[in-house]
Image (cartoon, rainbow, N blue to C red):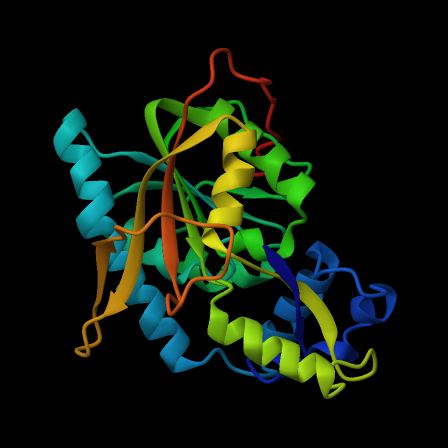
Length: 280
């Protein structure tokens, strides 16, 4: 199940005022809009919320401690990581500081300048994720919120491309930040009934989805679920990754706000072998 998501501002920047927003016609945010947003941010307009940064750093530490370290222990070496749509790379900075080999993918470069001042040799791929390609293998591919802005057919295509990038025991981590819970469903339906989302005040940002819907799309692309996790704040500024025992259904969850899926490729031959353009 999915539901359109709308937004009026992000980190203090009016999204409806961006030139790309005026040409979207109720289509989700695209690379042009994100490039304009991050240019505004780099110029000193708006500010990334400190709570957002703290939560993303806590999530990065939890992923490193629970998932990267387990992969390292099992295989005797650190995983090679590709992280998609990194934005300002808050999570990825933690992993780079820990010594991991992390390739950064982003549709524009403005958001990466601060990180690259500290990690100038970090490999990066710049371009629309729907078009960009790479000829390399990775042990872990991270999608931390990217699913929100992609349509179902685009996600299936992306999952198939990622399958070609995974090593034999490679993992795809999908962080369902726009998880459609019953609370979100009721709230969003009420806002629509009240006429809150108007073209002059909001843009289409992407989609709310249930984790079960994402799992079904991944299965269509030949990926199988290895594990599902809940990301839980411990009240001390840290985050724990807890195994989610309930089955992932297509209907909204009761209370989960953040669910992470760990997927593995389960098909026979890889669907395609894409040649990625490396812009480093």
